Every structure is written in structure tokens, then in C-alpha cells.
Length: 457
Image (cartoon, rainbow, N blue to C red; front, side, top):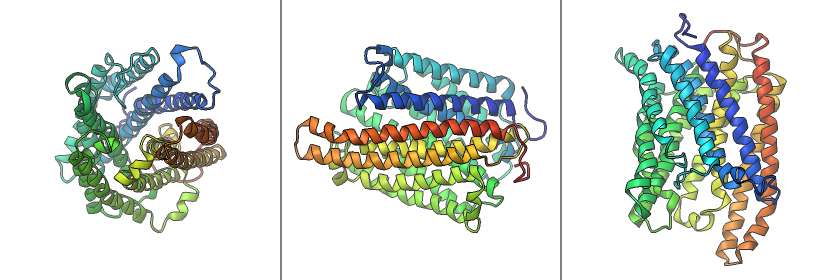
């Protein structure tokens, strides 16, 4: 269970995180499905407190981030960092396996704690307070595990942009996690605490998930296309735009609240300005693909990744519209926000993980990635299901917002929402079916050698 002497990659660790990521996404999807049934009066456990819908909802969201996404990203980091830096991670034999076990223990403790009713009353910081210290320690250890090889690599000359994103994500996340999980809980109550919570909600995405995700894309896309990214300077524009403007956005989650208006205006402006940085990233990857668009038809990992990039562009454009104070009058607290969150967290970062794991699962066994019939079914079921769910919830949000603005009775907005909620459950069923096919694809890709792409990237 040590690294390969050939490239410094600990393949058993990559595969362990891959299996964990896939196991958690299955649990997360079923938790979301059960939660959706509550809106249709079909919830199968109405009198079971441990499985109450509110607790399943927190299992759905926290499991997605800490179980599915972090494990998926860890698999990608353990593969990518040794290969582009030429340096092994800090310690894969002891620290690596300790981190793997500790992460799974923290996720399971969070799941049990949430279902048992020990959640914190902070949005996106519901992790039980007795789990938080262990997560902070894990994040600090991760900074050394992945940061040390990048530091050694950086001493030899200019760093590739993937390293910028990865090390920044590892540095930022322990700070923002402490800020979001401790300060509102113990030190800053009331509306000031809400402002900090809003910052945490967005920084969890923008200062951890986004930089690690984009860092992995800056490694895997050139590898899959066998060409460098179109513009290194443009990639740095995207990085610094993220660093300067993303931390200021959090208050846009609480527009039209008692938070001072200057803070709300600053959040709106920084959100809109950040879209300029996002454009540079999207354009960079599209131009990298130029001349090879046909490869998307046959390269399943690449197709997952570029579909995620397209979804990222859609959600960021949507974000620039929905944060306007005028738009917020209609869509605030509606299902519009739920649809937006699903497209960015699952339709973007989840799709990137599916692409990474499709590529790595056979590679760790010495085989080449390949498309399978199950893989094609998985891609189309999950993609169509995700897009339909997003669009359905966007329409539902507008209908709900208009109903509330008309001052109609609250139950009227519930009545008109039921058909949209039924479609959400149907599209969720599509996604679960696609996930089953994806698992079949992973198993098949590890059994048969590829007849397609050659190489050892």
C-alpha cells in the first residue's frame, strides 16, 4: 500500500477515495429522493424521528460536500499532484491512510449526528459541534499533505496554474471553515452572525470547491486533449479574480435583510464583477478544445468535464442575474435557489468528479479509459435529469415568487408548486438510474483493456 516507484502516485489511495466518493453519492441521492417525497405527501417514514425529512435534507447536503466531493477531489489530487510536480505527497503510507480513515469517520459521525438531531443551527455548517474540531485538524493536515509537494515543485521555477488553485484551496478552507462554524455559533450572534454565515456559505464553494475543482481541470483537460491550455496568462486572471472578488459575495444570500445596505451593494457588485473572471476561465477552456470538439463524442471523461464547464458558465451567468436586488424580490427563498444550487454543486463539480473517476478508475489498474454502453446511458440519464430538474425548479421559483408578491394565501403557492415538485422527483429518479449505470460503467472499465486511447498520462 505504498506509492508506485514509477510516478509517485499511491494508486490504492486513489482507488479508496474513488470507492468512498461513489458510495457517498449513492447515499446522498437516495436521501434527496426521500426528502422530495415529503413535498408530495408520499414520505415513507412519517413517524420516524431519526429519518425525518429535515434531517435527511441535511444528510443530503453535507454528505454531498464532505463525502462525495471531498473524496472525489482527494482521488484527483493524489493522482495529479505527484504527476505534474514530480514530487510525492508528504506521506502517503501513514498520513495518507490516516487522512482517508479520518475523513470517512468524520463523514459517518456527521451523518449519525445530523440524523440524531445534533445539528448546528447554521446554514451549510450543520455539522455537529463535536465533529468540527476533527474536520479542522483534517483540513490542516491536508494542507501539509498536498502543499508540501507543491512547495517543493515551486522552488524549482514558476508554478503551473493548477498548483496555484490547489494550494490556495488548501490554505483558504481551514480559515473559512473556522469562521463559518465557530464565529456565528459562539461569538457573533444576530444579524452580524448572519452576515458571516452568508460569507461562509459562499466561501465554502468559492474558496475550496471552486479552486480545487478548477485546479484539477487545469491538469486533466490538457492531459485528455494532449495539448497545453490555450492561455496561461488568462488562467491567472481567473485565479486572481476568484481570490479578490469571491470572498465579498456572501451577503448576497441575505439581500433585503437587516444587514446594512452598503454590505448588500458590495456583495451584488462583487458578484457581477466576478463573472468577468469566470468568462476568462470558460473562454480559456473552450479555446483549448478548439479543433478537437469531435473528441467529445468518444471521450466520456472529457464529455463529463466539458458538460460541467458548460453548466458552470450557465450557473455563473444565472448568479449575476439573480443577485440583483430587483430579481431577489421575486426569487428570494424560492425553489429557484434550490435549482441553482443543484446545477453548480452537482451539475458542475459532480460532473467533474464523474469525469475524473471515469478516467482514473481504469488507470489505477493499468488500463486505459474507455466508453461503455453503461457509461453512455449514465451520462445521458444524469445530464438530462439534472438539466430538467434545474429548469423545473427555476420555473417553480418564479411561480412561487409571483404568488407571494400577489399576497395570495400561502397554501396557494404550495398548491401550484406540487406539479413542479412531482417533476423534481421524476428527474431525481432519472439521476439515480443514471448513477446505477455509472457504477456499472466503472466496474466494466476496470475489467476490459481499452482498445482506444494509448498513453500513460
